[in-house]
Image (cartoon, rainbow, N blue to C red; front, side):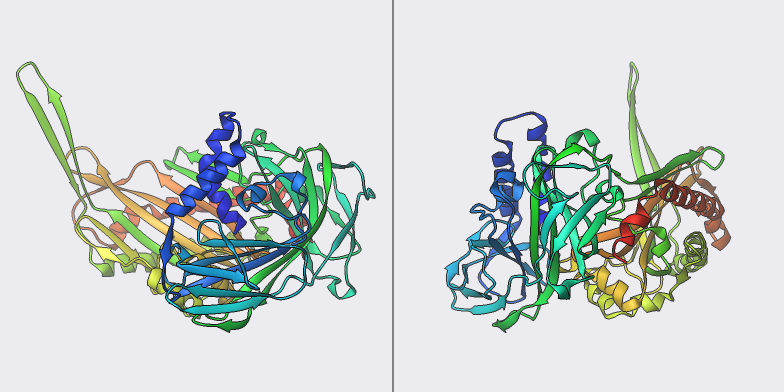
Length: 547
């Protein structure tokens, strides 16, 4: 939930850069206004899905985070309970034409279909009751987290003005119930980015009486990449916490059974004496002049990207080819006596679906083979192992249809589908997302997506060329319950194409897409990225904390 709000807030960050007063209040208003425009008021609960959560032991008010401004009524040490309403089969957020209460107390509507209520610390169950103006009712019950942890000291400092050097390892002393030994916990820290202060997760680790947070973790926090001059650790707060996914109880009405998140955090105000040098991700980028292709590969930081050594099994999510086969441009020149308009029409002969299918069948083994060989000889799952999962079938309604006209075409490999970016909220991110379920059900460590684009362009005379571009990404299993991970992504963009003449056959298409050159540069870029991960040295230590 917090992550989605931050996405909206970025639209207002320019006000901070301009140094305008009252930026936090202004950004809150902007975010609320934008959220309201993305929200629809509905009068029926049919098909509505709640996403609920409860956070306990809220941080001190003096910290001054954006969350405090966005959710007015903050109670330090108290509980914050939220619920967001979306539709299972549609994208969007929904405000209810009715009331939402917890144990009889009305919740406050915020924006983006989200309701919030604060209360003093209390372990008792919280019963949600929804009553629509139409008389329709529904409800469910959640409980605050019972997995409670206390931060006793930071590098031996228990109270007062605690100082911490984030360029070095930090030793945290903890207290917790015996049954929580070796369970997963997280470490978080307050960072100001573009004038907005918020808590960001540093790492997940195993619970122990004393844990060491490596300096590498502080370099790879869960923050969006940006210029390092835009970050500040002034007036910071270091916390430890637990997060679990629990089943709601006593579900009534039309709501399906679902899970909610329960958080508990404890921390201390800190003075950061030395800030970390943040890793904004690894880039393998360049241009091969001999081949005439630019490549740009990216691996996110170690919080958002698992080390390549964990990629032992690869499944194919989608592989598609698409292109523009018709293009018309006009240019006008003027002389002293006339105005002349020249129209240029470019056409690539329309190909039957069978031709594109054959090309995809030819390309897939060799492209996938490059990923397989470069990533530790990873196992490549049969395509149907992924497409046959229940989770993959559930996202089929959100897939884009193939097409083949005289203007453009789009064709997918076998039963794979190109899924729309506009999935329902509950399918789009985190451990409950479609991707997470596909990974779990297929047994894959990573899901590979590849798209091959062809664009018709002009050559000399009556000839045209097709310029190829390959884009790919490999997503991994989530980090914690809400963070998606990505092993890497990239593009290969050719600067010129092969001239087209005569009949188009299979071998001609292979030349047009420049398969041999594409495979060479794909391998080169991946090797550079692997070397950069090795040289960086952060990815292994950060993920070893969870083992």
